[in-house]
Length: 134
Image 1 (cartoon, helix red, strand yellow):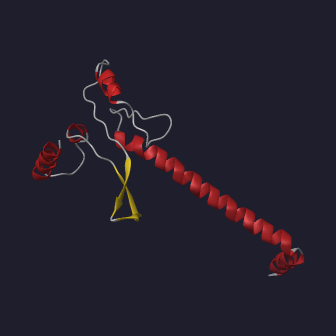
Image 2 (cartoon, one colour):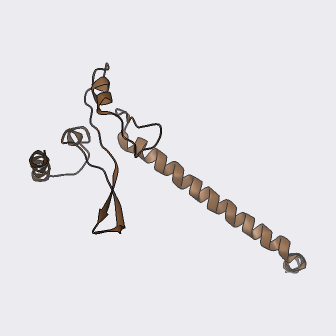
């Protein structure tokens, strides 16, 4: 109990120092949490891809697509079994405040990502919908 009195008197003696110390610890935890979140976000695509897949993206931003000619060049490389693409673009629902990202994909994307849990009827409905849109 005698140590608590010493700690309490030290805290009360220099209030600015105590406040700055608490704030610096809070900022450190916040920065660590944000940094960890960014690392998880960057690595989630790698974890999702698996060891037998390679994901290629633009060096500028994940929202910038690669030219479709790159798809043909990648298909000609040795060891490549299949190639699919997806393109990010922003979408809105009814008004601009209802923003959500969209990732349209071609039908062959489902052949590569077999771990997506879709029934055969859902896959055929998706492919039929794609064919009607083209």
